[in-house]
Image (cartoon, rainbow, N blue to C red; front, side):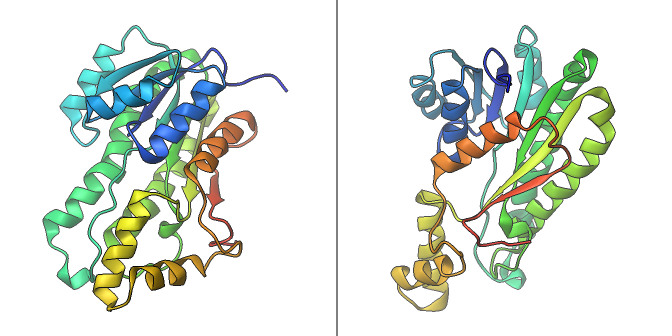
Length: 253
């Protein structure tokens, strides 16, 4: 199978830590040139230090002017892989307790940000007749998770954006897919377990056990597995308008 990653330029948003960092490292290990974007230069520079061929660029994906400025700054780059990973978890509380600005803040990054980045970087791919877009979603958009309505709704929106955009640009040679991780080991899930414990009056350990028990493998996935999944998706030439679950069996369809 020909290598579909080496020598290509990949832009990964939210690449300073967590899943974005893991995805960037996985692509860099396969020979891609990385453009690492996010809001914190120190975190992005730390990721860049582990990738041979990389470039750091600051952007707020929810701000049209910031995204347009990023596009203009990267006019000399041939971005052929766009990974929309930037996202926020949002509040953990009942819907009736969520303020409108809290709701809007989640959609601004998770949905508006994905739209703005695609809007900025798709035209050169269409002109070239090739390219890959992978939107990082979540299994939370597919099954109930009480206390997380804005996050769940935003990730459901990402699914709709992915398949519809894929239908629009597939004939131009652009593949658009989404990856839906389940619970991923790391600081975000630890935060969620603490908040759930406070909300439910249980211990953090009990909150974690209850959550992980929903997985058929009885564990969370790792950040490294998410990076490997992106590599695998880019290698599957017929994958298009698809959503891949990576949940250790938390979601089965």
